[in-house]
Image 1 (tube, rainbow, N blue to C red):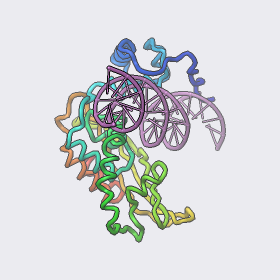
Image 2 (image 1 turned 45 degrees about the vertical axis):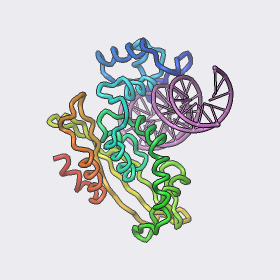
Image 3 (image 1 turned 90 degrees about the horizontal axis):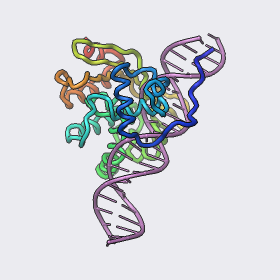
Image 4 (image 1 turned 135 degrees about the horizontal axis):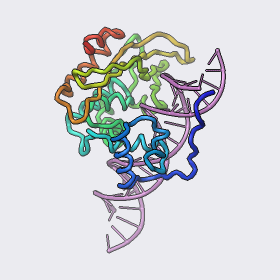
Length: 242
DNA sequence: AAAAGGACCAACCGCGGACAA
DNA sequence: ATTGTCCGCGGTTGGTCCTTT
């Protein structure tokens, strides 16, 4: 029944990674690939849990990671994608070559959230747009809401959580693509479902190492997402995957 | 020059979906 | 069909560096 018991965390190292640990992890993954995180630390000679190894590899050691400041173009794209996707950091990161979800999340929390708070304060004083008779949540509404849910005056709109529908590899474009589906819906004050706000799909691509020749401009990326959110289900995706 | 407070970011934690037995 | 683990995600924490007083 089930798999072998999960490893005990007793005796495992925590905190900052040393150069030696980085070397051990990089060497092991280079030779054996980055799968089976649970058993990887032992095989690589590391006193870390698999989760810690995965995080270190994905956010720091993985080839193609872009270090350094976020460019103005990236900054702009993050803001616009966040307006579409909410806190779906992995999806946003998928559209920023070399950037990790953790880096974007940190950048958002330390830079953009404060900046947008200032700039949207005026906008929030203006009359709100209305979709299907409901008020669009403001930044203040989102601030007061817990996690991915945004409360609104007449009820609340659930910001969609991405559901990975399938994964497609494209050798020609050297990308691996995951298809996600979203559904946002309204609830009334009593938590009773009262209709969909929108239903959309989108994809995320992770270019191969040091090969970004085929990726789209940041503006094109945003337009693609924007269009996908305006189309029903997979209509927009078909053209992207063709 | 030193202490206090703020900003930044790497790493950890807990949750939930996917999947194996 | 059920149970338990693995994996990935988003939220949060805590250490370090920087700025202000």
